[in-house]
Length: 503
Image 1 (tube, rainbow, N blue to C red):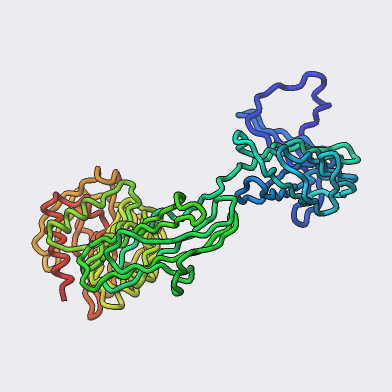
Image 2: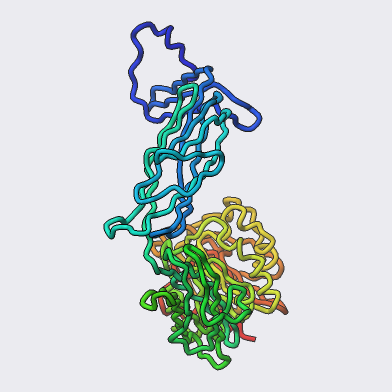
C-alpha cells in the first residue's frame, strides 16, 4: 500500500490483476490548488498501488450540444461547444475547428469565431488548469430537405493547443422534428378529496413541431364540474392556447369540483385534449381521475409493498362493515394535512417499512389527534432505534421507548387480550403468523400518560395499548395486525376498535 518505488524492484516487476483504477489529474480542488497527477490502482488481495507525476501537463476535452428545440427545414440550429482543461498545466494557443453539418448553411459565430471553407474556427484561447470555455455558432437547415434526411449530424470537431494536447468530439445528432406535433403532460394524474372540495391538476403543453402553432384545448367524459384554467389555476383559459414557437411550453390547469352529493368512491375521469390548429389531425391527451372520499375512515397504506398487505386490511374493514377510503403512500407519499384532518378515524399500517416509517407524518398526525381524531396504528418496526423516541411517540402514542433490548425485537407466538381493557377484554390467546411479513419479532411497550395495556405477549409483557382522553383516542399494536389470528379474528378486532372510537 502507498507509494511504490518501481526502480527498486529491478527489472522484474510484479504482475498482478488490477481490479479498479482511479486517476486524479491534479486540477484545482478547493483551497488545495494544482497538484501532481496521481494514478491509483487496486487489486484483489494484492494491495493498492500509486503512481505520481509532478509534471504540469494540460489535458483537453470537448463536448457539444444543440439548443434542444425541435427543428426542421429552414430552422436554425444553435450549437454550444465546451472545451475544458482537465489537466494540471495551462493550455495556451487553444484552437477549435468544427465543420458545419451537411444540409445546413452558416448563419453566425459568437465569441470571436470566424467562418471559412465550410468550417467555424476559434483561436488564441488560454485555459488554466480546471478552466473551461463555451463558444457558440448557428447554422440554418436547408429549406428543401430530402425525405430520407431524418437528422442533422455535426461531426469532425478538433481542438489543439500550443503545448500539444488536444481533443476530438463525438458526433452531435439533431433529429428532424415533424412540422406539427404536441405533448400534454403528465399523461395521467389522480387525486381523491372530500365532497364539495375542488382539486386542481397542473398540465404542461409543449409544441414539439418545428412550426409555430396554436392549440384548442377541450375536455370530455367528466361527470363532475370541470373547468380549464391558465397555469395560475384561477384565470380562464382562452379558446386557443398560443401561438407557441418550436419547443415553447404553456402551463394549463384543470379544476374539478366534487359535488356535495357525491357517493363515497365515486370516480370522475376527465380526458383533456390539445389539438393543433395548424393540423387538426395532430393532438395529445391527458387523463385526470378524481375520486370522492365521503367515508369517515381512512386506511393509510404505509407498507411500501414489501410485501403488499393492503388487501388484508381492506377485507377486515369490509367484514366489520366499515366504509373507508384508502391512501397508498407508495403511490403518493404527499398525504395532504387537510385531507387527513377531514376524517374521524384513521387506520395506519407500516408493515416491514423501515426506518422511521411515520416520522415524516408525525406533525400531521398530532394535528389530526388534537382535532379529536381516532388512530389505529401498527407495524413491524415503527419504534425501532430512535424512531420510538420522538415527541409524537412519547406524548401522543404514550410510549416511553429507550430502544433497549428489553423492549426491542422480542418475538412472541401469541398475543392475549387484557381483562378490563375497553378494546380487548375477553380476547384469548391469538396466534401471530410470522410468515406473513417474514419477520420473527415484535416489540414490548412501556406506557405513560394514562395509556393502558391492550395485549400482552407470551411472557405477559405489554405489546399493545389503548388510550382515551377527552380529545382523542388511540389503539397501537407493536405487532403487525396482518399477522394476527385468522380473518374472523381480524374482523372482530376491527369491530372492537371502531366501537372504542365511536363518540
